[in-house]
Every structure is written in C-alpha cells, then in structure tokens.
Image 1: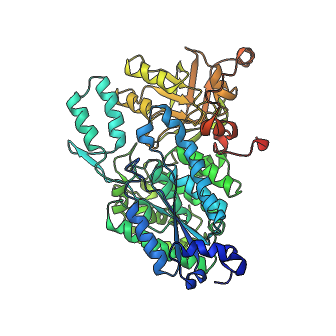
Image 2: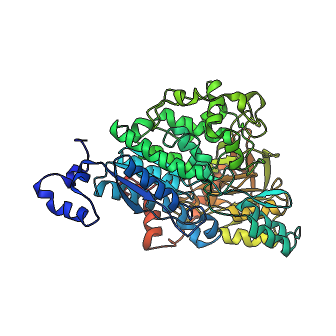
Image 3: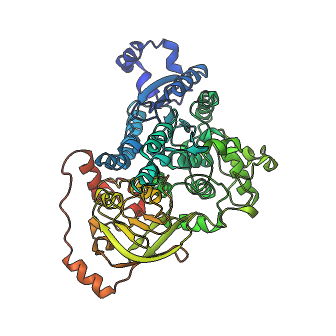
Length: 560
C-alpha cells in the first residue's frame, strides 16, 4: 500500500527516530508496509454501557492484525447519563460528545493513521465517534458496544427507565419501598447500553442504516458472542475498505442521512437524534436542517413497537429481524435511498436483497399498512415560544393538544423538587429553562422529572417544555430543544408563572398566549443571568456552542 498516510511518519532516512518509537512497541521492519489502524476504545467501568467493551476491542485488534494491519489502540472518554442524571454532572454529557470527537480527530491526524475503528457504548460515544470519523475522513467503521438485556420483575421487562419511573410511583404512594428496591436491583441485569429504543440504540441503528456499521450489529446484546464475532468481522471489512479507499464521506451523504433519519422515525427513536444528526451533518458539511426531520416524519410511519412508548426492547427487535428487516420494509415502500454505499462496498439495495419480509415478526416490526402511527413520531414545533423550532416526541401521546398554566422553574432541580412534593397538577405545563446549550450550560436531559411525572400518573395530563433536552427513554407530552434558549433571550425566558401555554402537536405549534406587545415589554425588562461557569470545559462549551436548532455543536468563536 504505497499510498499509506502513515508513510509520513514511517518512510525515509529522516524518519529513523519515528521508527525507533515503533520498535519500542515491538514493531518489526516489515510492519512499516502495513496500514496503521487506530482503534478508539471507549472501555470504561464508569457505566454498564461501556464496561463490556474490552472483549470487543480485543476481537477487533485481533481482526486488524489477522487481516494485515497494525493496531494502535487509544482511549476515548465517556460519562454515564444514567448515573449523572438529575445532577450538575449531567451538564457534562453533551459536552462529552465534542470531547470524544476531538479525541478521535486528534489521534487520527496527529499519528497519520490510515484507518480507524471506533468502539462505543453510552449515548455520546455514538455521535462523538462519528463526528471524529468524519473530521479525519480516513477509512473507518463504527462498532457499537451492544445493548443490555432486559431485567425482569413481576412478569414485566425492565429497563433503566423503569427505575426512574419507580421513583415517581414511590413518591405518589403507588409502590412500597421494598418494590422500589426490587426494581432498582433488577433494572440493569448486566453490561450493555440502555435497552429500549433510547439514544444509544437509536444512534447505533441509524449508523447501521447510514452504512457505517455492519448489518444486524446495532441491535446485538453486548453479552452475546455474536457481538464479539461482529467486532472481529468489522476489522476485516475495515481493512478491505482501506484497500479500496472507501472513505466516510463517500458513505455519509445527504441521502444516507435521510436513510438514517427514516429508520429513526420507523423505530420510534430518541429526540436526541435530531440534535446529533444536525451536528453530524455539520461535521460532514452536508446541508441538513431541522426542517428536514419534519419532511421525513411526514412520509415515514412508525412500524416498530419499542420502548419507551411501546412494549418491546432492542433484543426483541434483534430477534425479529433487526434493522435490516426495518430497512427492507421501508425499501419496499420506496422510503429508502437504496443506491447509497456502505462500508462493505455494497449498496444498501444489494445488502437488502437477501432479506425476506415474510420472516418479519409483526408484533414487533409491522408492515407499513399496519403501522403503529401513519407518520413519524419526532415532530418539529414552531411558534412564538420557539421560532427556530423545537422537538416533540408525539408517539403514544393521547392528548396531542393541551393548553394550560405555566409552572415555571429556572432549573431542573427546582422542578424536580416541586414534582416530588406533588405540587404539579393535571393540566399544568411545566417549564424548565436556563438549561440550554449555553444557559445550562450543556443542555441536561430531563429524564428524572419526566419519569417522575409518569410514575405519579401525570404523563398524559401534564406537559413539560424545556430549552434542555430529554433522554431517549422519555415519553409523553414533552417538548425539548426550545430555541432560542432562555439564556440568549429566547421567549421561554420571558414566561411567567400562570401564563397560558398551548402545545398543538397536530399543527406543530407551540405558543405562549401573550400579545406581541406584552412580549416586547417583557423583553425590555429581561436581564441576562450571570454566567454559571467561568473556567474549565463547561465554560469553554458555553462560549462555543451553537443553538440546539443547529445541533448544539461547537464552532470557533469568530463564527458565532
């Protein structure tokens, strides 16, 4: 491979010192003719999502070496959304997406790697890894760490969301402390990422649909041997892509992003996918806006009955045929771009040719003519509360239109305190603000308050809106990513306790029922809060983050 990038640091007499460093790691002279393949390993004992990745990294490393590559392993950080949820620590979650991307870009380009295999688990590993891949634009493949298997209690499948909702049930007196303890102990029975179609599984499914991961790999359980085998096979496919010079930006196009978003809609995926694919598209310099999600939503039905708003978990989806089956059904209806390239060198159409829809298990993956919902579930709402657009998950919502009094809280903690003290009543619209990309900073997920409301039996009668975001495990009448955010003077920062707010999912409308004159008067009296952080990574992110309507990614300050 005479065109190897790594020759920049391995070829010629002047690179003798460089080669000395490699010899110190056991390299032989003939190894300098092999490609240098980076392995970005997010193994961590911070979270069960990532604590089972090492066996996949070991398999991938063996695969790289078996298929005539040199493996260079480096780490990428992760944070646990589930553990940091409801605390200040959660502010670092979205920030970690940028940090992960920076790590991968840094190692890939500093070391002149020829290719890269990224292994990740928890939510931000996914978009962060893909953004790093795109920035480097060298042959690459994404290996998802795999989903967790469901826990079990009283003949029901459990996920981490079960534990969050149990907190609300306990506060409402619906379950005993003993029952809460049983749910707590059983919700995460092993390793792997959270088990419903939450953010990690949503993004892994989207990456498979986009062509950057192997077929079926996005829904495998971390604990199963097939996940290890898939990691090994991914290394083989990557080395082949390297030989054939298949680059990420050959695969990641506007059409393939549309395929990914179509699968997100079909599977009932996470609201976070909107944020992440805006950032991914930006990294790839692909024209893709928040309005494109609404365009895709209108034509792609929800055909998978998956948690959080449905019945089944990701291992059930895998058993029913996985993402290839979902894609085959969409393809048969003309809802996929089948000419898109995949990392294997085959097109999406060629990959799907082998799939028989007759094998579909319809209680989990339905045919289009028997869809759960005729249109997608991630709706983009606009109005005077959010002129740039915000995101609502409308699947399973029994009250798509609600008008009620605002219950205003300037942080998640204040809102959670009110909820657990049973101060929120049916018909209320809970407003949590100053939690946006800049105002939080970091745009925390509101899984704790939304789950508590559901646990109290208020999931259908109370709405919650925020300039923060939601966990992939959230469901109900919730609207996030309200833009502009409160901290930069967005209308949500002008709302007062008791103001009437209307959310109309049918009309994709979100409004505070005040005159333009009243809003103008309030805006004149509004004062920007003092910055919460003046140093460190949160301060850096707050200074460089774009609006949630653009993906809340970081850009150089002169471009803001």
